[in-house]
Each structure stands twice: as structure tokens, then as C-alpha cells.
Image 1 (cartoon, rainbow, N blue to C red):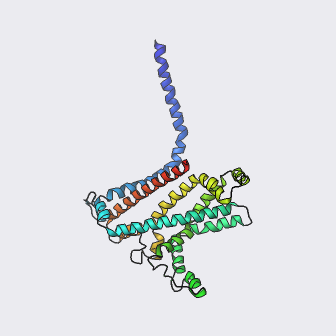
Image 2 (image 1 turned 90 degrees about the vertical axis):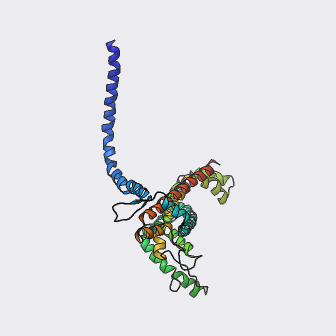
Image 3 (image 1 turned 135 degrees about the vertical axis):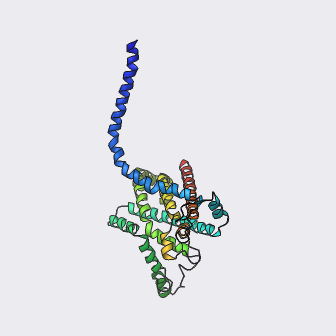
Length: 311
């Protein structure tokens, strides 16, 4: 009887010792990630919850007691602020236009740079190099390129080809496409490398079999390349939509949100609300609303591309 009671106790003691050994073995791993977790909590998690809390207050920077307003900031933003709807429209238009062009350009560049030819590595580096430039440099360069009177683009269109002189950054219809083109030139290098990595994972015998069966380039692309690139395409589209929905630097440097409010984005409006008018609670409501919109867009992209992959 005593032996029967001793066996469970020995097993429990052995299990505890095994758990302690596993914990000691894993402790260095946790210590290695501890600095990252500390910075992650301090500079990301804490600001997120602080911003969410601020959105329910009429927050004043120097005030010791903040006035709780509940959902008033959100109702004012979504029901009584026409400028919010304007900048949201501008941001969504810019994001979808930029991502659509960027995906096409980067996929074509990756397909070309997958082939073996002299100077391939040089062009891979060359196409990626603009991505490491700062947004201020890109904005200033393209502000000069799109300048109506002395811009490089209008020099060739007007002076060389005797064409019209477009007001690229002053025309309501052209300002967002112009900023979009500048953004594509600046950032298409990263998705190009991602697509290149995805293309290199596709087995070459599939292309050889398709060629033997008489499939043309377009049929090969739609039947082999595109279906097998769905995970890569999902990653590129999700990350790029999130990035472009937060656009700030390009329109701020190139147009200051003009003409009028035609290129003003959500983040520019948020920045001006917070740091020009010091309405921190209202700006926090904008940030939370933008985050919610991006979450919905991301979930929709996951649903759409997974549905496409199932076919």
C-alpha cells in the first residue's frame, strides 16, 4: 500500500525536475528576446493603448485632469467632419493606385531579373537602390521633376516634343497620380525582391512541361506562375496596402496636401490636428479609425486571395 502511494509521488517529483530542466535550457532564449520584448512593449504596445485611451478624452497636453467625452470624438469624426471623408478618400485612392502599379511593375521586373543574362546582379541592385533613400530626398527630387516651369518632365514634353505644359502637382486630376508615380519609383524594389524570391521557388520542370504541351507565355503565367505566387502576392499586397494607407512624407514634402486638400492624406490631417491645433484626443480617434480600416482591408485581402487560391 505504501509502495502504491509512493509511485505517484515519485512521478510528480520526476515531472517537476523535468520541467525545471526544460526551463533552465530555455532560459537563455528568453533572456535573448527580453530586450526586444521590453522595447516592443515600451514603444509599441504602450503607445497603442495610450492612444486608444486618449481617443475617449478631450485631451490637452498640459492639463493635469483630462475631460472624458466617450465616443464624442468618433461621432464628430465620422458624422460631422467633411474634411475627414475627403482625406480618407484621397488616402484610399492613393493606396490602391500605388499598390496596383507597384505590384505590376515589381512583378514584371522580378520576372525579367529571374532570367540569366550578363549584368543581372547589377540591375537587381540598381532597381533596389531607390528604396534605401529617405522620403525627404525623394519628395524634393520629384518636386523638381514635376515642376511646371523648370521640371525635367515638362522640359521633354513641352520644349523637346512641343506638347502641353501639365501642372503635375497643381492639377486636381494629376496630383495624386504624380505622387503615386514617385512612390512607385521609390519603393518598388522591395516587392520586386520578394517576388523574385517567390519565382525562384517555383520548380523549373513545371515550365518545361508546359512548354512541351504547347502553352504560351500568357497561359504559363496564368496557369503556373500566378497560382503558385498567391502566398507571395498576399504578403506583398497586405504589407504595401498597410504602408501606403499611412502615407505622409511624399505629399507633405511635394505638395503640403495641396492644391487645396486634394492630396491631403489621413496622416497629414492627423499630424496637423495633433501638433498644429493640439487636439490630441481627436487625432487619436483618427489614428484608431485608420487602424480599424486597415485591419478590415487586410482581412478582406486574406479572404479574397485565399478564395482565389482555392480555385
